[in-house]
Structures are given as structure tokens and as C-alpha cells.
Image (cartoon, rainbow, N blue to C red; front, side):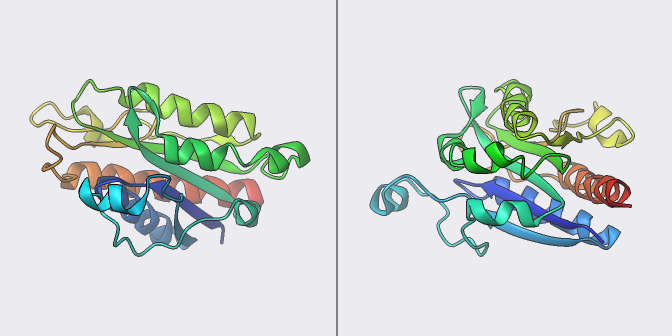
Length: 199
């Protein structure tokens, strides 16, 4: 069974919840799924004063361990429609892996959150995907076979490029069951494709 890494950065816990659902979906398929966080770049005092969720259980990721996985699913919140600085800083350190082609042919996927429905979800997903492609990875999204992303009876995240959630401007909105279902679907699909590529 494939080894799947869910690598994320979560300021307020929304991305953490999606990451846990993605890992659960991969495990439903039978994969070994691990959660890791990108390191915080904000001083701890500033993070505390700003209400960051600093009690997250997932260990801090190292660049060196990335090549140990068959699939890597990366998630972070949007910053002006692009990848957040913490995740960008972490991924900027993968040059050695890129130079060796260490991630070539592995499966990559993306997920994100925004404050509003039109706050840059798809551009943020694409900014993550750009990194995956540069690293030689095979990109998997969230296809329309997950019918939940077609819902029009509720506000919901999700796109064919990856699972998403909408947090609201004050951050009080939590991922809905539909959004979490999309995340689980994506995790399972990534695990399935990683297994097929390995066979």
C-alpha cells in the first residue's frame, strides 16, 4: 500500500481539519497516511497575540523526508490568491530534491481555504500545483466524480483542482460535511492512483 504524506500549514485550524479528512480518505483505501506541518515563520509571541492555532498535533515536516512518500498532498490557506509564505518558504528548500529528481513520478495534490467564495481558491491551488509540476510529480485533483462540489443549495468549497473550504472573514466558519467529504474523496483518490503507479 502507498505511503501518503499530507503536508500542510494551518493558521487558524481550518486547513488542519481538511488535512485530517484527506488523511482519513487515504487510510480508507488502505494507505499509510502521515500528517506533517510546514514550520511557522511568524515569531511565537506574534502568533499567540494574533490567535493562531499553535496546539496542532502534527509534527513539523523536514524536506529530507519528502522522498520517502509515494504521494504528497499539500495544503495551505491563500495569501492574496497565492500560496502562503510559510508553505512557500518550506517548498523553496526542496531544490536538492528537484536537482536529484527525487520526487519525479510521485503523486502530488493540493488543497486550500479562503475567507470568501471568490477569495483566490483556484489560483492558490494552481500556485501549489506549479511547485508539484516543477518537482516532477503527477498531479491529481478533485474530479467531478465527487458530486458534492456541484452543490448549489449551500455555500461550499471544492473545485476540480482540489478540496477547499471557506472560512468567512472572521474565521468562524468551519469546514462543512460536504467540504470534508471532498477532502476524504481526494485523499482516497490520491492513494488509489499512487497504488496504481506503483504496481
